[in-house]
Image (cartoon, rainbow over all chains, first blue to last red; front, top):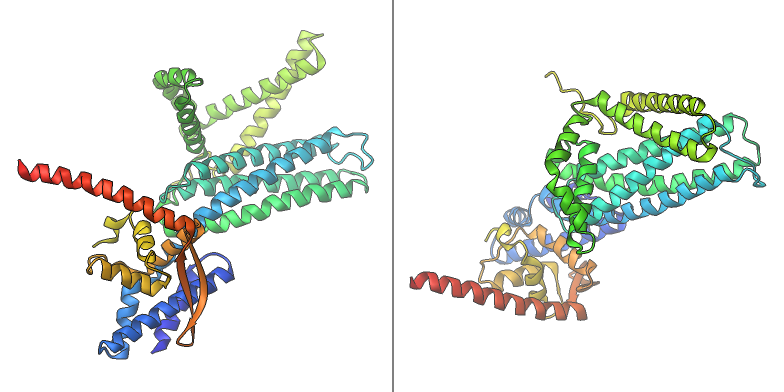
Length: 338
Length: 109
């Protein structure tokens, strides 16, 4: 009849997350508990089969027990891995920035191709945004048992795309004729991307466990809502500060206006308007950067360059939105017809 | 009593049981049941995550021992755990006195 206890322990082991050492410890503790309970039942006059049934019933179902262990481990894991991802992301961003700014470095210039640089910067921006958001979310919900795991899963998805983009960037650089001496630099950047990937993989494992526990939260969470949640958190923190409280309070008074702007530029209801706004902002920023760097010698040329840059940004935004919008939570997935 | 009713108090109760001395998980659960005259009868498997959590917070320490030919994890309070028990006891006494006062007032009216 110990088979029933062994089967229970096998099921529990399959439902747990964490290291093998941790699972072995839990298995030993639970086995000892169940055997103690069976012995107590039998010494009270119960038949062995009945005692085992009572011991298992009192201990709880595998799901109940695994949920308790997994929730604690997953929350701790998410906090740690969020921090690790942020550290790896900052180092990665610095390494990438350095690799593009050292044309006379003895190793040679890895990201000399414009396309490789564009993909690399795209990756850097995504990596940093999702790493910062992940850390803020994990920190803000550190005491919350019912934190929304789906939001962290969304950020992990962003980071996955960023790592893919960084690999493409390095691939493009090497395919575009980056010198053999650049291989070392490529290896460094790849190692950093892999470090981020490892911490990300760990976070994903924890998140999957959380999502398994609360499948109702595995919904169509949107990145836009995630940004809004982080902004709300930061605003609340600032409002608590007597020195910085004025601006957020004023902002909160203008909340209806902000809501109107949000409705007008919502990626869910006005996707193309949203794309146009992002493209204009990005193109405008690049044009201003160009103006600062090159000066305003010729207004017509500047206008033409600005228009071209804005157009390029618009094309990139629309392309990203079309290809990755659903995956990155920028637009809802199509509803099921069933 | 339902586990939901104990939410927020379980950690303090486990520490209080372990204030009597080191014990393994099964003994902690039986101790809780005995000390509460059978009122606190939890789903036993949910107590172990709480014990692990308290150990992680540095309020408990644990080590393996051997009993009846099998491995057994024995938990004991740390110095911080001792202080936490004293704090939790003080807070609970103040809280329950306040609740008691409210109920006595309600009964009197």
